[in-house]
Image 1: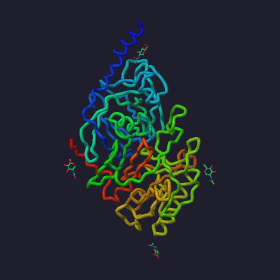
Image 2: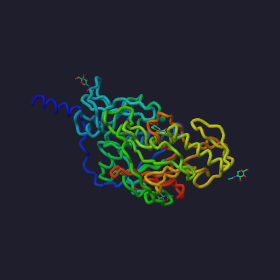
Image 3: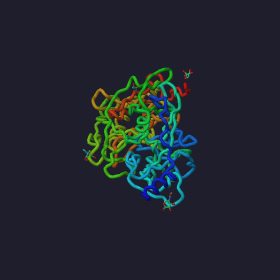
Length: 432
Ligand SMILES: *[C@@H]1O[C@H](CO)[C@@H](O)[C@H](O)[C@H]1NC(C)=O
Ligand SMILES: *[C@@H]1O[C@H](CO)[C@@H](O)[C@H](O)[C@H]1NC(C)=O
Ligand SMILES: *[C@@H]1O[C@H](CO)[C@@H](O)[C@H](O)[C@H]1NC(C)=O
Ligand SMILES: *[C@@H]1O[C@H](CO)[C@@H](O)[C@H](O)[C@H]1NC(C)=O
């Protein structure tokens, strides 16, 4: 009894966790956050308001990241910060793999009897330990056309990380926002907090947008990108792709089933074994926002680029020397420009059947490295690539991707340029 009282006393003294706030009378159907591209690192950044008092927290968007992690060692001041006690429901939601103490004065990221996870910098492939924590986050709701009223989640779960984990991220950033397929990824937590569909959509560009919840997803001058999606199943890789993880944890990343690749509508001959995920979690195709360009396993890279070079030559497009990180570049002199970007051979990712194609046009395949030179924006992942095809950010821009976690399905629009709009055209003027 005495020890129980002591326990309760210390709990009250140290936890200071606010009870869940009273139910908000306004329940949003969807939420919206902006995404911008950092010109020097090519990382996609977003901003979420967190803590009490609220401060804007800049984070790198990590589509396959397991949760949000932030630097708690520097400038973390909040009266609503709250560590997750070992054995709590929060620890189990987070899949926490340890219980730790901290032998200095308590502060965010340093508490006794707190469970931990392994926050991952997926840009540098560095992992460390960090406390599972909770704090308020606040963001804007949306009707799909404009941002609306601000809503908050009083006990949003995230991981604390030490400052060094930020190395390699864009300047000003204090962590990463994980949109992966876990129970504490951003999409699942927001869906649970507001009881909406476990869906989210990303639309990347220099100034793009991310929606949590179902469509409409409307871009000026009034194009609802949720109306013209093509669907393909999402696959789970049973072996985690994180830098550190508990044994048996599946990957939180989003894999799709590319069955073949066509260049200028002609099938490229590939070693198809590489296109499926094997029992060790090697192979397959995933979507990534931390890779600026699509990465192809060496033999796939060779086959696709050879086909592209031949098809380009047939159009009198002249090859020139590569410009790192690209190996395949062309003189822009014989390349016309179209509404869908440079007029070059199309590249198709063929999905569950011949009729389901993700077609990549010049706007997403060619990178202008100078006025005179355009390069094929794909890079060689070498022969020991863990994942054979990693569809990177440049290939995703101006395309709306909707991830449905409940049905394990990806919806993708073709390039929005074909519909006279772009991912930069969400109207961020609030109508609240
Ligand atoms: C954790 O407990 C130890 C031993 O009781 C104590 O010295 C230390 O200050 C505590 N640390 C925190 C962060 O509460
Ligand atoms: C195809 O790829 C698999 C997996 O890497 C490899 O074991 C096999 O030898 C490859 N086949 C050919 C014909 O290169
Ligand atoms: C390519 O150039 C050759 C020689 O100048 C010309 O005969 C041919 O018609 C051109 N082909 C195309 C597709 O422009
Ligand atoms: C953007 O939304 C605001 C608020 O609804 C509206 O007043 C404005 O006209 C919209 N902008 C355009 C270009 O349609």
